[in-house]
Image (tube, rainbow, N blue to C red):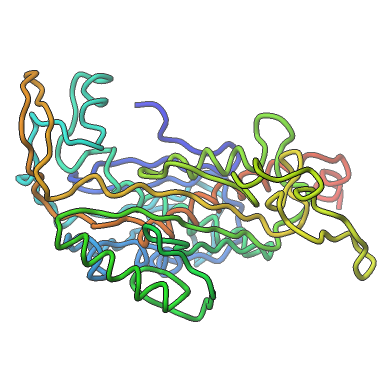
Length: 360
């Protein structure tokens, strides 16, 4: 299977299936000398793991990470960092090898490979994202050395969106607005009672990213971020800065005016989302993604099986009524990996940079 590697200079390769013995990731290109431990990665995994709130799947996984290589005496060595997360709570009997579940990759996997691991979706399962989160935790540690922070939150659930944001607020939906959380919670509970699911939006902000990150043609900052984030299962759209509302604006409204502030160039607005021509301008990079409703619902659905017969399908198993809250940390992970990769690439953009590194 191709397509399991993301990144060029700072890259990850994930492996494993939802109901296999384990899943994992190999991180390549992480510089040596960064302090890193199991705990650093575990903190991120605990934010994603199932069974942590009333609004997630009842599958219970500890998601305990084992760092197998690339660390010596608490620091990265510059060699590949291999990490393993064992699967311990599978129920493979809940899945039917013959039926095609609406909204899932069952049908397309059979078309492409002629064979698939039907247990929990195999590689197409959201379980695979735990490996991304582990890799993203390493990227976050690298970026922290440069003062760069990547932070995401639930912007909306269905048609309930946050308004008065307070990042000190903690709740099961990852919404930094208690009023919005209370309204959204009722929507989620109603959907669960009806055997249905919901979608929503996630907002991500990258702060203190150095100017000059991103390449001007195919590897634009927004292009690489889009590649990473859109590769997450369930993400159906992405917008940067003013996003799709830019289509309704005039140039005089959308252009970010420059001005001098304390001897430096600043912007009065950030409609561009922190980049021009695919290159970071030093202001916060912001984007928002749309997350579809979880396709596994308990209502009876119309489908077909691999014999070409029309069927009525009742999906069994333990599934999230919405994936938005757990996807927040996955979005952070892919954003961090994208930026880490482009940061390393940007180092070689000037001969002066290379001289500073090699001739000091």
